[in-house]
Length: 420
Image 1 (cartoon, rainbow, N blue to C red):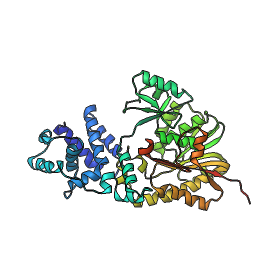
Image 2: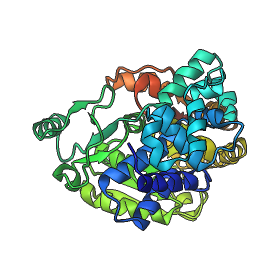
Image 3: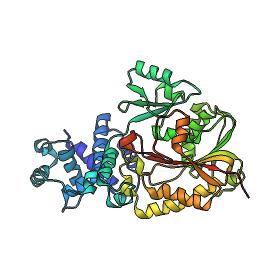
């Protein structure tokens, strides 16, 4: 099941992760760099056990209580309750006192609380749009499931059907995504970084929900388009392909590191219309010179990321009501700054990978109250025009348990002509 050396690594990794002072995947990457002699089997066991603890932390803490939920206790209980280890298998890594305690834990009933059942902290449950406990439970369980591996085909280089044919012929289990016309969903987690489709820029890893933001933005040939919070550039590449590498596409971001990570992806893509630009803040002079000139602006705003808990289960503990309130201020400021770029008749898309109304509808409602020259274009109508059979209403609301995507929110806004 697990030997003492492996368990020591598991305990160390969990101990660093539950400090919640940096992303769990960053903790794991740094640990594996430091212990670079670990084999792939050991790495897999360590990663799977540590992330299982993060996904089921509400349950594990409840089982460990009233004792302190130390990394060791959490790891041992995870092995017994989540991975089905029997006490005999843990003899090499436990003492008699621990085995007696684990024997009691094995049969212990979990508390009947929504927090434990949905594996969500109280503060998250209190802020969700869902108020019905069954809806919260369905969402929470969806967020515990592993996320699929989605790809986006760069249609400048290959059609999706051809990419699907190649992948399936080479032993991958691949199918078209149900909503995105460019998406491919792979079974399992195969390594793709050396596959020719990846190295030649034919495919990029991108969740289907993220791809739908491109459909809502609707970039076209010859237009001027801005990806206002470009990050590592996945959506920028999508917009560039929609524009057939024509027009002018600006990729703004405040992080030099993220834009540096974007450069190799941009080089693989073959796009020639993209202009990455580092900005100091949302009111940078580089942005101001584009005021009133841009056809389409996508704002994938900085957010709590709670829609990505399938991939980043630590976020529900690294975020807080206070951090969300700070993000709300930033989101409102960024959206207002981005709106100044949009020309009359132009489109502004506000999006987050959050599930909280405070980061989504509330930001849009406050923006519309302060900007009567913008109106909502129903997202379901925009998607229907592109023959996408997805209707979540006037605002796009994607949820893992319903759509098998990350949790996404998006609103399409259009700048109306001045009637004064």
